[in-house]
Length: 246
Image (cartoon, rainbow, N blue to C red; front, side):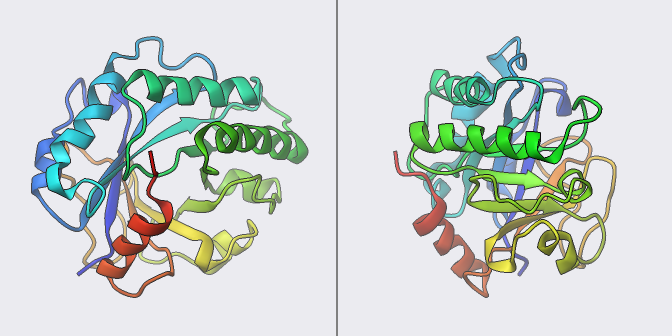
């Protein structure tokens, strides 16, 4: 059996519909869904998509929720906008969609190069994401998860910036340790490996590449946390260490 697998989605992925019931019914290794909540201080202009799917992800999971199926929200960080206001914006959208519940994973902060201003320096990224993470920890009670990759490697950033765990991407059959170690993280801190993206049907042998959530490929992430050698141990670790306590 593969490690548990998460899928993440945003409003443009689905043309208006995500079949979360089908995702839950498919069972393991499908272990949860991440929904893009916010970006900078301007997305979403219409919160109805998130307002619909955030509670749906919990209700559809039924008895699996918080046990073998989890949900998380993520924020795309912009270096040219106020970090604290971005954190408040992200947390505010989740609150307006029904808030957090026992079993939710920590907020994920996505830090990539797309849409960032030209010439951003490493210290600007460190200062901004650190301020974002501190605000989230103060208000939410838990430090966020960092999603990052080549952007931080190119800037030679090894600071954890106040984040608790890392998710990184490598589209291929393996995840070289150098990819996360060069960002200052070790295997025990690596929560997830995004192995398949919207544009790449790649990944390790025996892992799913098509998702029951809806038509077309979506970003798929395998749980890699080293606190357990079996899927059951990994899920138990999620329940006890990272699942949000409301």
